[in-house]
Length: 267
Image (cartoon, rainbow, N blue to C red; front, side):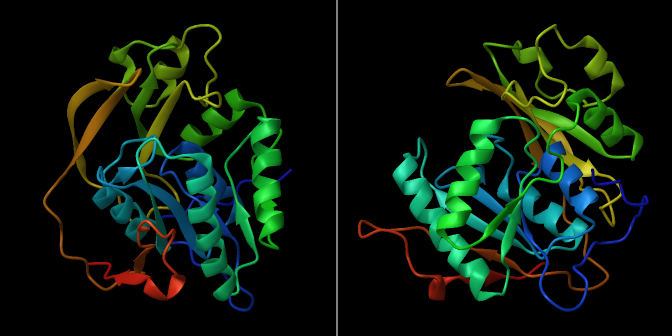
């Protein structure tokens, strides 16, 4: 079992030599905890819903995703997918992204999954097709223990999405803390591993500084309640951070080639 690294308040960068793994980054607690356990990553990999400009499923604004990347000191590759994305389109977009990772010398992708065996098997198949390895630094751990280790390590997060079939809308926008865990109804996983809720992490040991935001309205849509997190006015950084790259969208002919990747300045 991986042990947690020492608490830190500086950006994590991969060690010199061969590039470390990419990390599937939703911006939520499990991906942040995976980064903490890994001790670093070469790149964050995030799907962003086209037209909405938000992290897929979590509903977090792309600007806050980029603020997270700056705070943890790791560049992010944004992979656009359409609303109600089909599996075929998702796999095509991700296959292009994996080729981009391989071109950078990255040979593995880490995920924050904990116990869903079918999800793990799917990820392993997709990575194997690309000639890459899937890594699961949190796999097999007790989810209640993971949630409490996350809090003891000093992470802070807010609940940004809840499945209304499992929790009512009042849970959206709440702080993910001990009080939240104690109040969860029976049958709801402490890490939301079965999709009961999703979070956005805004501070913790892998962050050089907190991500500024303020809570907006809670909106119900398609069986979910989303808490909108609004940007605070940006603060000019002391220096330039890692670059941010967005994988461009596809036209009728399918995904565009990696040569059309466009860098975004981390300012």
